Image 1 (cartoon, rainbow, N blue to C red):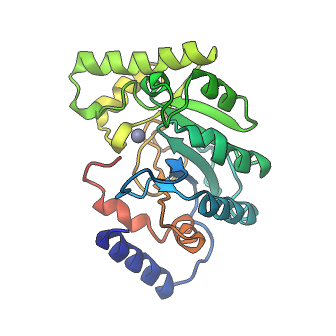
Image 2 (cartoon, rainbow, N blue to C red):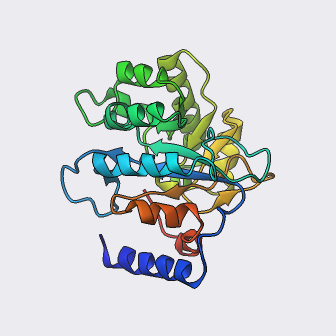
Length: 256
Ligand SMILES: [Zn+2]
């Protein structure tokens, strides 16, 4: 864990110490995970969570079901506290390690996949067959994550349009079903990128900005709260109860 993260965590723990857990904040909280497995090398952003820890997270989510019912990734129709689970990047371990646990607890989840990863045969990522298998897991849905996993804000208008269209078409071709949701690679999005997502036919998109989503939130700019490799179940609870939401004030820098 980086020194910075350690400081942020201390701040969040102190915020709770100043108050109480109370009730979960209103609105839909969308959790963002990446890989569940063993990091092949240094993991400075904490994107690879140990399977045992992920299992503890799922158990914590299941235990909170009464206060924070699991919900699909969708625009919230009301302000009731709810929880959605998402994964970025389409790691193979989303299918092998994460999906079975979530399905066993009846927790729906959405996986955002850049289709270029599907072609990286023998890699860390889902190939087409594995993607189709994942799409058949009860509660699973699949969205795009750019076509090539490049920072969308840095593309010119023509490149952006092509990237959005390719991400949607290639996934739809692979799955044989419509794909209408996406998340922004590195969390990089601005008004132009969100408009391009809408123009390409996406109706839902996730950012990497911490917080919950209330009715009336822009469905193409839904906030997501990232869970990282060193988040204990208690740290996860801090995030679910809003004690990390101050962190979005620090989120102007580029993210994964
Ligand atoms: Zn990504």
